[in-house]
Amino acid sequence: MILAFQLSDLITIPFGYLLGWLYQLTSSYGLALILFAILVKLVLMPASAKGKKSTMKMSRLTPQMNLIREKYANDQQKMNTAIQELYKKEGVSMTGGCLWSLLPLLVLLPLYSVVRQPIIYMLHESMETTSAIMNTIKEAMPDLVNSGNLYYEQMLAAPLLPQFAEELKGIVSNPQTLEGLNFQFLGIDLARIPNIAIWNWDNFGWANWGLLLMPVLSVASQFVSMFVMQKMNNSLVTNEKGIQDQEAAKESQMNKTNKTMMYIMPLMTLWIGFTVPAALSLYWFIQGVVSTVSDAYLTARYRKIYDAEDAERLKRALEEERLEMEKERLRAQKRAENPDGITENTSKKKLQKAQQREEAAAKAAAQREYAAKRGIILDEPEKKDTSLSGIPSRPYCKGRAYDPNRYHRED
Image 1 (tube, one colour):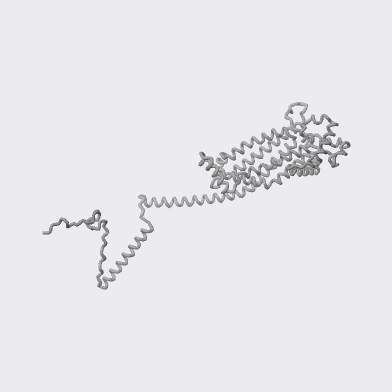
Image 2 (cartoon, helix red, strand yellow):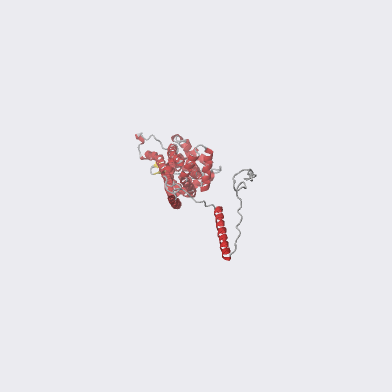
């Protein structure tokens, strides 16, 4: 058993047991890695679904984000605030998609330790026992560590364990350890580190060519996966009416970032592929293939929901346009009927006062008609002087002491 416990062992030990069990099941290290990659992808599918959903939501908001960037082009703080408010309104996490996309990397790091130290994690020997095994093999084969990287000495020693079964019987705790591990897969030694010096005709063979193809295939699968994902995300970009907006998708910041990463990440994978055993390149290759399939599945799944939303948005937009056209038609009709733009005063209070005056006049007319039939003479109401000055003959004079007979001489 492994005596020295570290926090990373919470992941590496289960990974080691799983990879070891798959190896015993398939009797092939390559098939075990392939099944391991598929199982890990299935386990991480809920997290991948959350990340995909968040990414798709962000893609759909691209036109609105472009408008915000144009509006606040000279004020970065207001731009960030407006984008945050938009994300909050639409229920989009600014870091959700990125965090979920980092989970495969968190799996790759522990897997690297499992691949690099198969005697400890796959054969379940302690560090002390592993050290004793390595010392025994090195004494018998001094050139072993010179034929490869010291960092991967366990991978070099694991296939040789059956040759030293007699010497190791008193050292190992698990008899299955003496069976060792076979890293051959389709004629390729997955424990070896690929070497680009294949133009040497002495090494011209499938074992070397296949070893070289491992990192190349892993890069190709990763590039295809990212390319397909970007195309699918761009197809989800729609404007406020629910219509696909390809121009906004091309000019979006997310599209530019993904396009840059689509070239940088495969180049990094290629470089790493020529510095680590081919087993990790095989894992990356399978991950890329499975990621492409799962991404297509998740896109198709969520696209049904978003297509329904787009159809509803388009329906509302068309209805708003119809109502606006009807209003414009009525306005045009009114302009045609009244080209001079003369309108009556339709104030509510003034209409009420006019109605009251009409009712009072009708009532007074009825009273006069009734009085005339009866022979009654009604007194005419005194007309109230409404001139500003109080003098009917001079309604606009400022002084009220004006007397028209003041300078009149009586004869």
